[in-house]
Image (cartoon, rainbow, N blue to C red; front, top):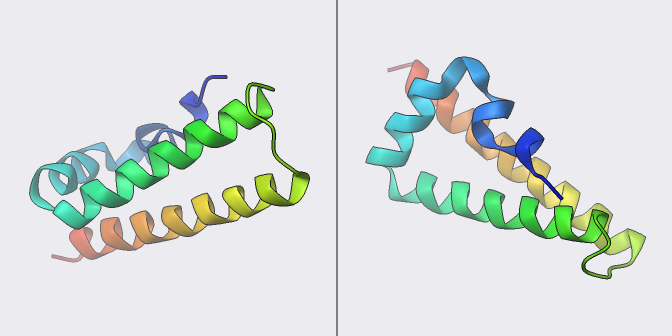
Length: 82
């Protein structure tokens, strides 16, 4: 049930300092990171058999998580462009 592979630091290993700065400085980023964490946890529970969901629901959650990762990547890119 581990979501280690979906932790933002694991997904963006070269951007740890940017992730930290965004978490400290940006309320919207903190909200985005929290939503990502909650989605990843929900997906892990479903995949681990702890919660029930249809295949369609699971795929929808994964698509939502990918959308959040796109937003995270955009925020990192914007920060790098400073």
